[in-house]
Image (cartoon, rainbow, N blue to C red; front, side, top):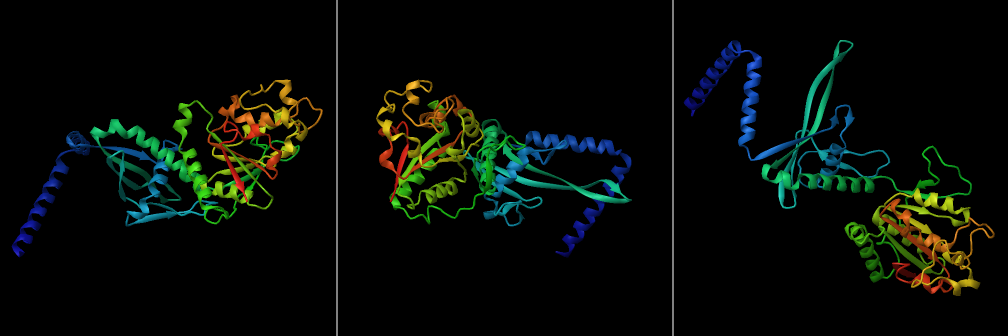
Length: 387
């Protein structure tokens, strides 16, 4: 055994001496060209290809790098031995990430890939005579050449979608409301907002277990139904009617739905809306993946004219004067006043393109005052009785 180690040390010494002689004879440019040629030859015969995702693309931040970082953080904590932990401002969640030069395996559409986090340290410049250390961060994706054309684009799109979901779940959710005569802010927003921290969830909600399960399944199917809505050329929205006596948990149910979906909530105070144009501006400024709440809709219906309301089988035109006679305007005598049917049909009109994946929730404490036409399946997708 001793002779083996002696021979190995002697061989290494000979190789080191040979390398010194070759470096003295051949210029550095030739060495660099030789190594580059060797690397290309190895890559040509290799069955894998490598895709680098740098953190900085020129002078701008590479959004794909951030998306990959968030995507890997969703499962890296269970499979990596060394992690980097981060927590962003206004977030209650800790983000797990790959440490320097760490790697992790993933599978997409039956294809195995590998991600490696590469961190290169360098000293690009000096300040006051002292070098300032810097680093270059990137992710390297290793994928088989035969699979690159088949899944690379769809895999990266999948990562971007998953990263957006993670951001939405980690960011602070907001509760919006409109106020009378409020001017637009610097971003052109007509809504006031406060942090939404309601503790209600479906686990704590006092409701029949079958009803809770039905609601959660309906919400899950809605969020996963983008392809279905696109095929049917319909607006990606859902309408719910919550009815019951005051204090039966309508607000808690809305909060539980928002916490379940990680959606923001917009409470539309119709008594503070003065015209159709203002209502349209409010609805257009609501974001996708949000819940729009319209409370006490029975107050908008004129009890003396409920029998004249348009039926679902023969809907009235938005501009039919007869339709305006069937509901009570928010401001009597105003030609530009809002009708309830215009509000109800807003998500189905041309303005449905202004946002997607939105849920409209209507509440009432007087179910008996509602016209039967409101309860048609074409008007309300799901009715929830709160007892």
